[in-house]
Length: 454
Image (cartoon, rainbow, N blue to C red; front, side, top):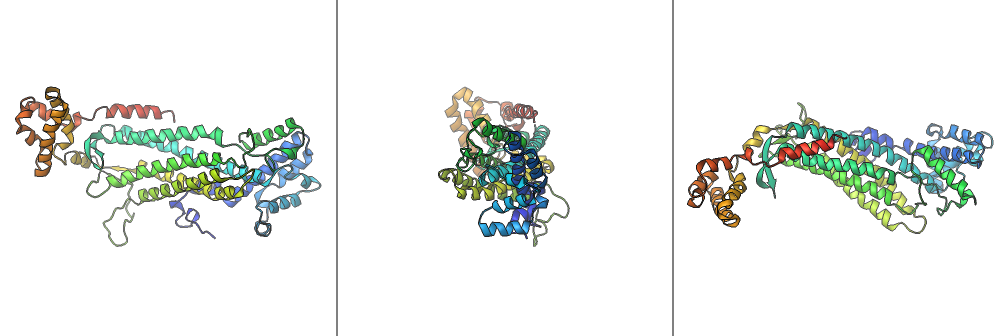
């Protein structure tokens, strides 16, 4: 029975991926808890706290397929406790006296925190891999469209000419920083927990070296970092992961929104991937709606909202243990990973299949009949009459050109204050948009070069 869009049989791929759903499935969660119990037994056997035979037996039975899920469900409901029913089942599955050593010295939150951290680590690897793939796709697109002329827009209005490759390079540079953030957070965030009831490790006895050795061996076995101190109420690691994921989702949403804006019928410079049979409307057969990009924007909105829950958990956890924070993370961490992972995956599909209408971009550059080059004219004229005087002169010509729907060139040629300093040839050269893209191409090259290391 599915009850959430992330694992819906028919809507699920709009809000997650099968790969990430497997990471956060009931089976994966259960196995992460069992992996902890088995690794703990092995670590304790290594320092003489448990017999080696007991550790081997606990390892043998610590498999999700051996657990009676109906009994586990009933046990959780009856006890109101997420783990005790599982510990009892693992104990009963063990032959001989091995069951006596199950969960030795651990507290429930050691298991659940470390289990969620293992799942988050797996999701991080998937999202980081896909983020690198997106960076490669953006680099290819930026390189291909390096010199494709299009209008630059500020405040939604034509500004000065840019190239489409330049716009893509801005996206790429942001994605590159996200890759760095994901790489940098890993050793800081993916740290396991084994600290006991009040996080002092009193449950392992009065030999500090042996207690810390158990902790070290346990985390090495699980592939996690060793905590400097217990972190039952220090929830900043999940909050940091959620913060970076929310930022990544925001970037995916921004890219998708830009495609939507440039796919508007009146603009039509870009179009998300389209294939025959893709339906934009159930009632208007002509529609080619940017529904992939709209979905990405929805994922980004939801992911950003989940970061609030993780910050709340970080900021309200009380004393040495507070399960209100933990319960919120059980819901928020999987969902923010699923949503962000889906946004990255689908953004990659959009970029790889993006349709670029270069001719329409060029037509739109000319749509305002030269006004897009007003800055170029103003700066050149300013060399003779001063910047502010030149601004006022070109402003008058530009406003008249806009309101009269005439080419800027005509208004400039009618003004003696302009023609007294600029020749016809100079004015025509200044009104060539190809000559006023600045360092757009060079910036594309710089960003693409930086991204090569991915």
